[in-house]
Image 1 (cartoon, rainbow, N blue to C red):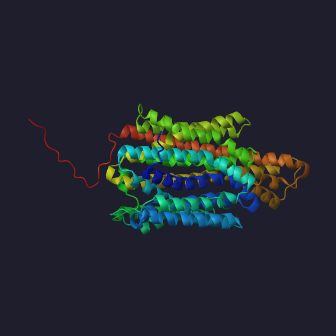
Image 2 (cartoon, rainbow, N blue to C red):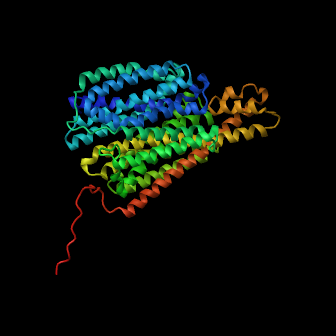
Length: 524
């Protein structure tokens, strides 16, 4: 059987897919090493959140401009620049002396990832012109992404156990070098002869709004939701988002074409993509925290424990494609969101019990829902727009996906932190025989929330086991609340999809500049 990578286009496909895979691998590997990072760098829970959020924030905010710059200045050139920046940022992550330095380097890595992913996707799309060949190429790309998702927890666990967490970033340096050599040899330069103009104000207002809202979500549990700084960040983010919407309505070449949202099917597909990312895909980063901090597994056990979720995410898109022969795209979306909600509810139940089988079942069901949605969300978005707007729709799809991951991690993290912190504080005061000074209790909660459970429980002598059990139980309770919130989000998106099924009667958007049909009186 002929290899799909034997031709010139096939080698371009492999090179571009590996470039995309690096961004996915780095996102999912970090979830495994976060408790170790918190312990060694003495990071707080909010600082741990920023290690993930700063990367995803810059990634999501710059995907659209990265694609526009690649179209204008050359996809190969921008791809190589993205690789170089990604490698430099990975080195800074590996050498970070503090948590603040680490999440600053992660922000730079997110910038590099945007300028790595966007031109990689464009390079693949440019290499295949025939519809059937392009479909097969994207299927191969999907398999590589799925395998990356399955292998990422195991790779992160092995690196963390044998080499230490810093090598989770250091390993990117030789990988970027090899990939850069492949890009130089295999990828031809290409440009869009009619590149779309940039929208600087739209980019700045959107990214600033998301940053302020994320900042409010991450710091709210620690500083108080009604504190001046938290309210100011929230209101500032809301104001900038309204400014973004107002500007996009007036801009001649907007970053986001709002007319696309006049179609119920498109709104439902974007809502499904956002909910999928915020309630299923985000679990690649949250579930390792649950397994290590609430269940007490080490990094290697966590990597193996993630397999039910990861394998389901890999295999279920195949079932989704078969269901497409019997169900409409919107029905598959509603089904996937329903299964995702069920998986989160099972995880909520599992978080409050000691059953390992229930955890495995919940993760498998949650991964199954995510797997059904993973391929179908992109298909639904692209299927609800005319062909000439495919580029804009693809950008909206990718941006909504990573904005959903960011919102899910920050939002569910806030729910987790609020519930777990309150349970720990009340538990420490109620635990028989322990007279806790407020400052010592706060120090215990801070270390336990960051995932440094053993360090937090040290100093309690014979009560150490009881204190450790209290911390893990509080973390499990916090996760039960987070899983419930994720289930609610998936159900709300499912309701929007079901509404679109009843409302929508067409599957393509009529261009806003199309002439309104003239109404003629009926023939006599």
